[in-house]
Length: 214
Picture 1 (cartoon, rainbow, N blue to C red):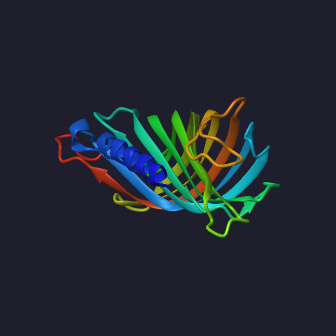
Picture 2: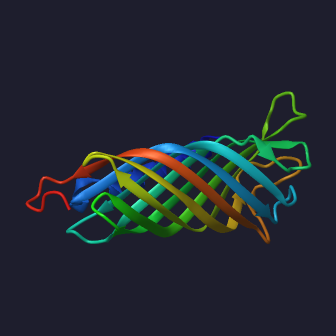
């Protein structure tokens, strides 16, 4: 579990660096809202299974010099409530990260389409329902590629709402915790497909440079 939160901390630090003033961004936006992730895993020692997870979504984009290409991140913390795992193990918490180049397309002055693609990292923790001590089966981390696409509508220069979804395909996974059923190490033949729609409310941030509002 400590590894789980350590990886989350690293990702958030990377996101903060992308959106720091050192990038001299002339426009940034940050959104917080709700999401619902569906993940279909294949190749695990637990067998093929599906996890449906509601949770919180945090996303942002950063652009400089009036360019329509910049950086983005999307971070979802998920609390699994539905799954098709047939063993004694059950998911407790999941986190999904995306980081990479982002793009924007101005449809009108207030209505924008955005998208991005990059590295996807997914963390999943499970526990043994038959264990009185509730020991964790594993802290699984998987890697792959993913994308983010959505639309945002600016109510004012500062406040907007957005609706979108992330998609991901992870092709490598590692188990951190060794148990009597699953050992630490890379998982052979692993794959996971995920889709995570979200809705949020956010804030626009503009630089104090001579360009003003984009």
